Length: 211
Image 1 (cartoon, rainbow, N blue to C red):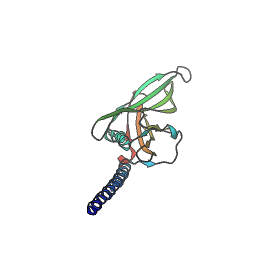
Image 2 (cartoon, one colour; image 1 turned 120 degrees about the vertical axis):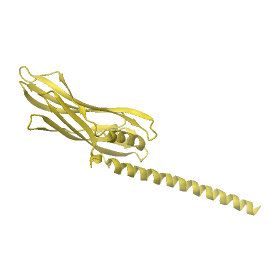
Image 3 (cartoon, one colour; image 1 turned 90 degrees about the vertical axis):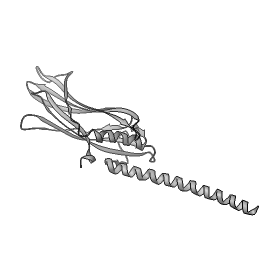
Image 4 (cartoon, one colour; image 1 turned 180 degrees about the horizontal axis):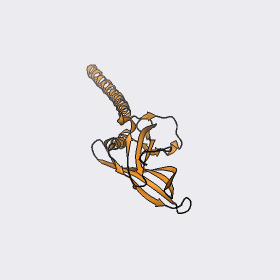
């Protein structure tokens, strides 16, 4: 009888220890996987950011699905779309916006559809008698998986009269299964536009994946 009790106690202790070890292993695997994801996509931890409370909370897998969609489509070039908007500059002038939109589909590791999302850069100009006046950049996005922030764009003119735009923007995530940590990922935007020809191209790429 005593031997049976001893055996029973041993089994309980072993089972408890096995469960504890399994939980520790899962925690270590989760942390290790997260570090790999950070290294692969150039994810940076941040301590604070304006409107941090509005950054959506997602799992590490959901964040990875967004970044993988951007990585896979980083070499795709899109054509610019120009449209006249309300307002004018001077006599006979028009206000134009060059909209650069890229749409993506986020999917889980198993390939299940998660959500569609889009990034849009709008470069705003006043055009008056063939003179072009840059008046600012607008960044917008459509998703509840992250927050996207941009802070202006660099504008330069080429020898042939074209215009080149570049900007480094950031996606912000709050990762729920990593102690709700706040992270950001740099995304490079590059575009060009010829106002005389009325055409141009652009793309979005993960900064880290270009190296």
